[in-house]
Image 1 (spheres, rainbow, N blue to C red):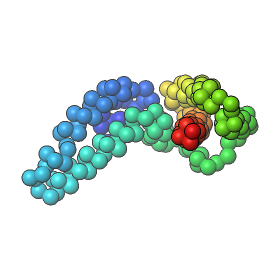
Image 2 (cartoon, helix red, strand yellow):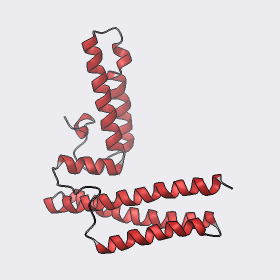
Image 3 (spheres, one colour):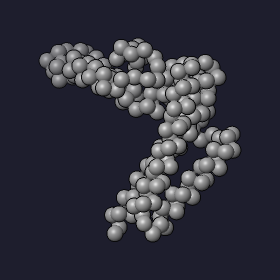
Length: 176
């Protein structure tokens, strides 16, 4: 049984995260290990395994990028290694620009404005790629899944830059 089936969803990228959370709570109440405290050790072990599976499934499906990765895995779409270089030269140039922009935030006169501006650039790029990936995942062909995997790798890059920006923001405002 795959993660989508556990929650009664079809295998697609789009899903109702509120419904997912509600079903998660219901399932966890049924299989929570505390309910099996007086059961046999085998039943307790089964309860722990079910609870862990439901947790893993929930954590994967509630996060869009993890959900996309899982969906591509289910579709047996070959995905390049995270460390593989991008063959998209324009995206490589964009990566360099974004790293330079992040470095500029450090040296800006108005850190708050620079952070907001950079965050807006990241959000716009992320949203554009996410929409493209979503469309490709909905298409669900061998080629579209490969292209969706490429978009996913790019989205992870944007996500990492967002984490780097958050760390920089903490450094800038905690050192003042």
